[in-house]
Length: 114
Length: 112
Image 1 (cartoon, rainbow over the protein chains, first blue to last red):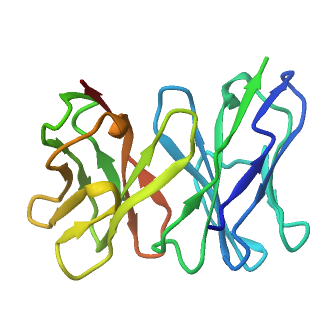
Image 2 (image 1 turned 180 degrees about the vertical axis):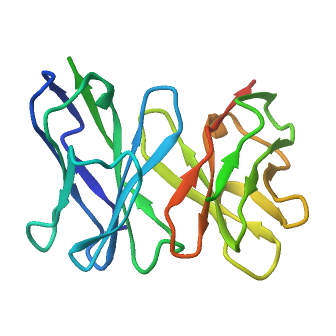
């Protein structure tokens, strides 16, 4: 069964550094998403991406964040100048059609900012 | 904007007992409703979803949920739980062409 994969599974970085989280969505899916889950808190929507551009973003997704689909398979989330409060689990998801279609989630990347 | 409230942060239950995890939402428009499960150290897995049609939705692993528009609820139920159902359960709502909002989650612990 096809699945969404994410790398790395864990990332430790120093405050102020840039990190890139990578995701490989399911191959025939057209919509891609990033969510984050701060430890002990709810899953929060960050951004959705379709047709090579951002279609929706939350208030969390400020200028510190950017997304990119650099090739036909990868979908990346870049966090510039990380802050302590960026420590969280970051989930990538993809869906075949729109946002109301089933979103398939990856296993997540646990980011720790020191 | 839509929001989701999961009324119980933790639900302990004995094996083979029935369980109901409560979810209420608020929205001014039509919504799509979802339940996801998160097992320890894993990503989110869709249990079931309501888009339209029958208000009783059946999902995987024997779970079902009922959409009640008048009470703006979408409670998740299972008639007999197993130890393996121990996990975090998230209710989520999506308005038309809008982002998906998750509830805070309910931790279901099934005891032998």
